Image 1: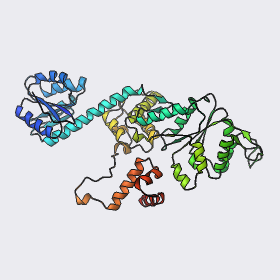
Image 2: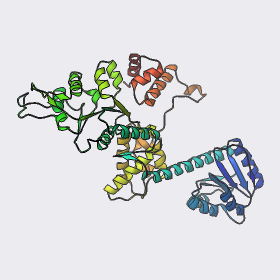
Image 3: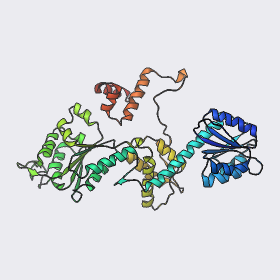
Image 4: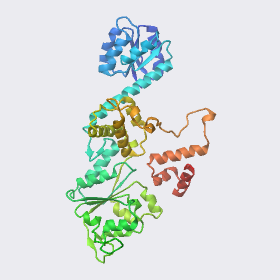
Length: 458
């Protein structure tokens, strides 16, 4: 038995009765960053496994005393250790036997060290992902939740802390983040944890109503104030008395209506449409937007004084692509919900599905993930969700990169194309916030807008 001392991206146990081959592979793999322990005696394998940590086993198929198929059966099951089988007698029948025994891969002699290293890298990554999936499965039941919010990433824990600290007060809260990140769920969580939890939670989407109707919805109207005003109506601010009013898509509120909202917040009174008297209101204000509200202020589409009034406490919801392992936590959460609703018990996600879910960028965030898992639960025919059950765009997605690593002149691009890719990558990194993107790029916003117009497909 011998061990190479090179620092490793993965620890390998090599089992082969050909000592010369073991030494050759240990040297070649060691040069590529692997830590290799080898033995020419299958009888030593159990002791080595108990005394050392290994990420993968590379074993010969035909050896005296214990062949690779039997070894594979022992390791791939209970230990869940990936096993790569090597043999000089490659055949379809032998490959099928190895795979059925739980082999991760099957290689034939003569061996190419580069091919072996690539197979080992994949096996190590496979095991690391499997461990992460198992960890996340255990974590689902222990994860802190606020309503439907699930996650243990640093950004989500920070959001949870802000919710807990802000909830007891009556301070106005502005929640920002991309569409589908759970802004309304945060608003409801603030309400449920506040001293106003016994009061109503009233929600309105400012982008869904025209200006005249939105004013009436918020502040109410008196009978005869306008056509079809057949009876007086108190308005949502009045209905939210003692509770919370949530104004979603606040950045889309018409500019003409914003001074009236500002006055209502400052004076704690509203004037119904068509009325000549003020009505006192007592509701906590929570607002949300998926737009760059500071850019709207600069464009004179949103009042700066109103912004400071609604932005006493700011909670920013991270995009799903920035939440790491939360993707699998949420996927498991939705799987349990939908499988229960459909009375369709499922074990979880296989490795391929987990990999696709983690790689995808989720532009629609948590809402898109929920839709994806519901679809998969409906379509799957097996005991677990596989990559074939996921939408085509999730299965086919590959992360984009700005930098070019090729030396092939035919694959190189113009400086203009490099700039385009970099600008779009920066914009993606800041979740579409053009103010932040322009600061990072060193451009004024008008120049950035002009470039984005040029990049838009015709």
